[in-house]
Image (cartoon, rainbow, N blue to C red; front, side, top):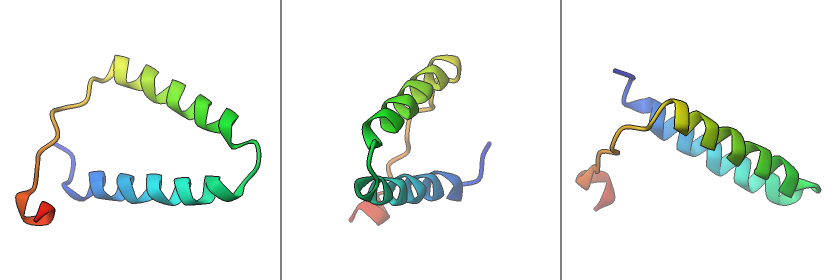
Amino acid sequence: MRDSNSSARLHMRRRAALTFRRRTPRSHATAAARSRSRRALRETHPAPRPRIHRRRAG
C-alpha cells in the first residue's frame, strides 16, 4: 500500500502544473498528451476507489 501523503502531493503537483500551464503558450498539445498518457496508465493500472476523508472535507 502506498503512503497516505502521495495522493495529496500528486494533487498539489497537478494544481501547480495547472497554474503554470495557464501562463505558457502551446499548452493544449501538452495537456492532450498528458491526458492521453494518463488514460493509457489508467487502462493498465485501474485506480482504487478513492477514500473520502470527512474530516478534511468538512
